[in-house]
Image (cartoon, rainbow, N blue to C red; front, side, top):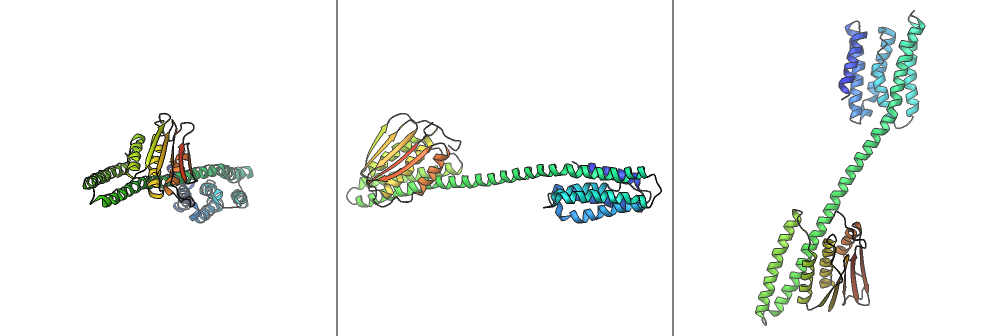
Length: 354
């Protein structure tokens, strides 16, 4: 937006002061230096061209004062200097003073070669050029800070976007683990049961194989829904599925409903129930499981827990981060052969992640 304006002003100044073609060429170099510096400054990489552009603009101002009688020859320097000086890593204040001093000293040198009125020379070659350069340079310092803040905000947004991608990938991996891990373990149990009964109870074997087929089909459907971001867990369906699995494994299961579960937290509670069911079937020698539902939470207690230290349960660890992130609490305890998993949302809160 500013580049055409800078170019137009530079062309007008060259047309005003240049009396010959070579003067126009020299003054034009100052304008070109200003435009090049501005383009690279806008690209936030002015350091690449700062020195050559400053050198060209400084020489043009020197020639304009001592040779061409062109008091507007400071135009290039008044653009390049304010753009380059605030970008210096250190000694910016000293550099700004040096820039203004150079413009003033070179302008004052006009008194050595001319018999013009002193006040006119001081105004046209010293006060105006040095004043304009000083004002523009002083303006660019807070302006540079502003652009620095904008750059930091852009970097912060980029980092947040990257973190969002990482979080989404972790969520997808966790959901995929919930689906596939749960299904494969149940399929393993049912096939093991079918192998034991293949000779003694063919009808039961056939039933188990039908259930395996249905379970695999359902898992394929859930995987597709996950891939297209359409998967939503239903707590009631997960509760019924958990009961069937525990009963099929010969585990006595009891469900207590102390209240209707808040619909806003139902999906996360369903994930906790599914992951806990898989852990019980995989890691415990349970004989009894008690599931308690309240308006804002679920508690699952089973016996048959190992007396060894609590194993690393990565699925629950991932779920804990999700539950906490949505305003809830996830408790995992192992004591006296019993294992407790409890998820609660004390204030009935849930985040957008649900």
